[in-house]
Structure formats: C-alpha cells, structure tokens
Image: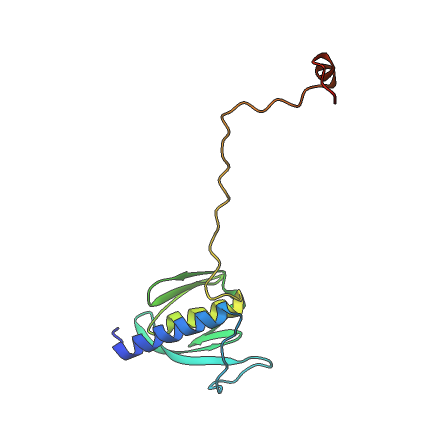
Length: 152
C-alpha cells in the first residue's frame, strides 16, 4: 500500500529526533490516551500501519502494542528492522508491520524494552588470535643466574 510522501517524511523525521533524544537519555513523550490504559501505563501515539496487506490503526503504549489484537511489549523476543517495516517475534507468532510511522514506533519499543534507540545487536565473540610463535621461556632459574654471575 502506498503512503503519502509527507507522511513518510514526517515519520522519518520523528524517528530521527526520537532516536537522538533516547541516545541522550530521554524518553518518549506521552500523549492523551485514545484507549483505556492500565494503571501506570502511558500512551505514546496512534498511527496507520499495514498488517497483512490491510491498513489498520496501531496504538503504542508503555506496555502494549494494539493492532486489533494486543501484544505485550515484554513478550517481544526479537525485532527485525527494515526500511519502513518491523517484524516483532513473540513466543507464538511474528507480527510484521509497515508504514511511515513504523520506524518511529520501533524506537519507542526499543526505548521501553532496552532503554536504547535500537535493539541490541548480536555481538560475536571476539576472535582469538592464534599464536604460532613458541611460548616465551620463563625467566632464568636461580641456578642459571648464579652460574652466570648474575644477582637475583
């Protein structure tokens, strides 16, 4: 589904600004709720998304993503980001969303789950350098020092 260029531009700009704020230690700003919130929960926004080739309204809160069904943010086990889309893996399913505001929503989710603007990358273990040289000999034994007239 096509989106207006103005929406794409606004979504990208909002994502960039929010990512910078989160990197500096800030948090997303809450908005007036459009859904019933649980105690202590904040709503961060609502916007159009595409889910299974259908346009829907998504609502993102500090604890849930609501796109018809409700998904707990704490239930996300992995995220795969693309240009204008995100795939969120939950225990029993994967939810793929796309749209101009999805990059912004991804930053909100990362800020809530990880406290960062992006999901943590899988960091490979550091490569161990293989040493082909023979190991250094230990310091001379005391008997060798005396034999050479050296003090220990």
